[in-house]
Image 1 (cartoon, helix red, strand yellow):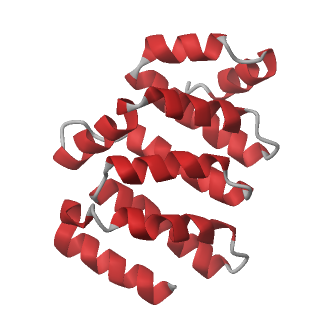
Image 2 (tube, rainbow, N blue to C red):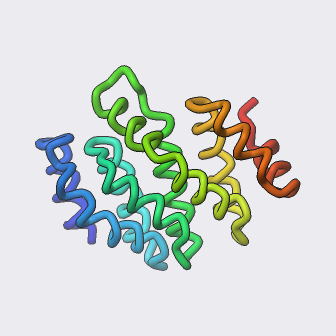
Length: 166
């Protein structure tokens, strides 16, 4: 796996956003590697996912990330939410950052659906990651985020308030 991730890192360096068509093909397996108990595999997979999504964002890749927020493994859910947070915090003044934000904000319905699921997750690390993701989204779309938060259960609202940046 390290060799594959090293090749992907080299491709990112040389192709940048030109790698976007390949990303949806490799993303599902890299996300699944989050729950591998061998840290060398899970950590390198996580950093490769983040690098791919930062360098070559696309709507199909974003949709895969959102879908994996409902994975059966909490490590995969956490990694997916962290990736969404990275997308939402992208620098809109740079071309890849603007593309990442566009893809993240284009379909708010599935994004809010995924956030609703992970804010009620059984795993505390996933819930914390979802809180950070929510506030990153709130910074981009405060009205829609406020409406979303108002529809959540009181316990989920409280958790999100605890995660609010100071």
